[in-house]
Image (tube, rainbow over all chains, first blue to last red; front, side):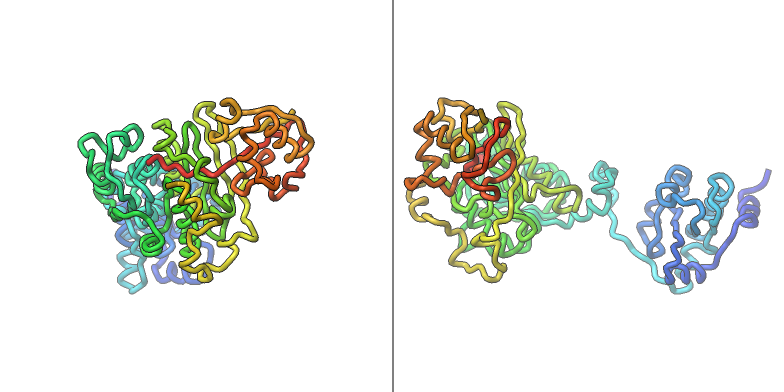
Length: 394
Length: 92
């Protein structure tokens, strides 16, 4: 029986070995050769050859076809010192039918000794890898998407019926920073639907209560609290720097104000509203789709715009709508899928019907038909009959 | 007969129905037939000069009638007209 060292020596005689210099030349001249790192995950994450794909040797047989489907393609394998890659090259050549495989002599150690650059990828900590493993496993999110979520700043307007489920699930999903704007305190009548709060936090400011709930799920999330009422005087300052805004506002004047401010900052807004058993959902992505004013040029009079407080709402409904909003946020951040921009979803919980309507950009929209810097502070949130509306709303 | 989907805020004006069947050759006729049958909806749909209120969006199937022919958009028997007022509730 041959020793391990003898086996490796024999294998190396049967395969082609190339010098790091040749691999470096290949990688510079765009030859189309595929460079494969066959080391373990943690080794790859420390540093790897720029542009290399990662297929650990233990998964070579099951995964290499996913990375290199064409068996006639030039493939260069490397590991730390050139032994594992030699064995892997032998397997690909003899057992998997790859026609043009080579192993890089001396591995990444010799590559570095020669002074060639390495790529140090950003990685998840072991704890994060475990926590977000089910995200990383789906190709549409993957490691890249998870890193985008961790870098994302999402602003929740309201920690009420819509904001509660959004806060909990976006925290669980690993959104790095969650801002919460709410000047209310937790009331017993909120607990029928506002699941970020709890019985023992009645009387506590909602921003503080939501922060506790968020950190119970995911202590890594940074929470920025704004215990204020959103107004023309503070909105630009608050929304600046956020990647996505989740609109769970309960009144029209602030929704128009938000629209105009978000067009100025070009921040996408995931908007939902609820009443009784029905919900509406859309994404207003400034300049890529319609804005809120394109859909609703003017709000209805106060008597036709009852609030949930006055009219009642099925407690589960904001849960459904707030989670649909959260899905849109994840898609906006990661770039996966198609968002609801340009579409409006109507959900009727009683009949379990979903109706989808088209929403078009209005070429004459008073706000988004203009450049962001043309919109002034004075006109933000103003709409026809604004004063009468607000007087009627009391 | 075409189907009109009635939003929650207008249901009180039509006896609680979610959908109402009415006849009409275009969107304007259909909405006027609704207003004739359920007079309480008239002032909510139309302004005093007979125009559709600006805060009411009307869709023929999934398309906003503003990008079609407005109230003059033809309606066939199998079409659904959706009346959509803005909602602002956030579950506060």
